[in-house]
Length: 371
Image (cartoon, rainbow, N blue to C red; front, side, top):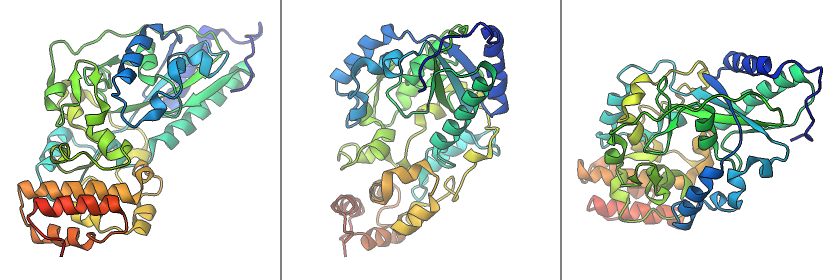
C-alpha cells in the first residue's frame, strides 16, 4: 500500500466518488460493490474461540497473524474503509435446475464431483486483476491515495467486512448469503485511506431453516455459524496436505475437490446469478467427468489441463489421493467394478506413499488385491 495521504480540498466529493465506484465496479463485472468501516472488534472473541478450539485444522495461516486479521488498520496502516465487491461465478449456461443436477451426480458412482466454483479459471486472478483496475479508476478520480487489493490472499476477515458493507449476511453454514444471489459468488476487497460514506448492513434471513446443517455429509457444521473445518470436505480435499482420516473417507463420497452440499440445499440459491464473465465457464469437461478418466491423468497432463485453474494449487499427488477416496467409495454402489479396480491397481505402486495408502484403502473397499 502506498503511504496514506489526506483527502485534498480539491478532490471530488466523496459521496459522488462512492457512487462512481459502484458504477465502475459494475462495468468491471462485479455484481455488487459496497463500502464499510473497518471496526471488527465484535468479531475478535469469536475468532479467538474458533482458533482455540482448533477448528482451523492445518490452516496455520488463520492463527499466525493473531488479531491482526480483525484489525485491517494494523495490517495496512492508514486504512479507514473497505470497498467490498461481489462477483457471481455460476457459468453463463447454467440451467435453472442446476442444483438438482448436481445432486444427481453425487449419486453416480462413476462421476467425479468438482465444486462448481472450481471448474473455470482461478478466481484469485480474475478478481485481483479487476479490483486493481477499480483501484486505478479511483486514483484517476481522486489522485494519489493509499490502498491495497485483497482476494482471499491475506489475513483479512473478508466475510465480516462484506457483511458489514451490506453485501449479505452470514448464513448458518458460515458462507455469505444475498437475497438477490444466494451464495454462489466470490468476494474481494480494497482497503483504502479514503473516508468514504459507508453502506448499511443487511439483516439475516435464514429464519428457522437449518437445511445446510442437516445436509453436511460430515457434520462439519456444528450449529448455526459454527464450522469445524477439520471435518469439512472442502478442507479435507483442498487444504489438508496429508492423509484423510479413515472415518471421514466414506462420508466424502465422490466429491474430489470441494463440496457444494450446503449450497445445493439452501433455498436462497434459487436466486443464484450467472456470471457476466466467461472466465468461470467450465473447462476440461469437469462438470461431467468420470473419476477413472481423471485418475488416469499423468502429472504433466494434470498441470497442462489445469493451468490457470484453482485445482492446480493442490498438486497431482493430492488430486490422486482425493480420486482414490472417491473410487473407493464407489464400492458402495458398484463393488468390484472392473474399470475402477483396474484404475486403482495401475496406481498401487505410485512413488508417493500418500497415494499408495489411499489406493490400498480404496482397493480394500472393493475387496480387491493390489495385483
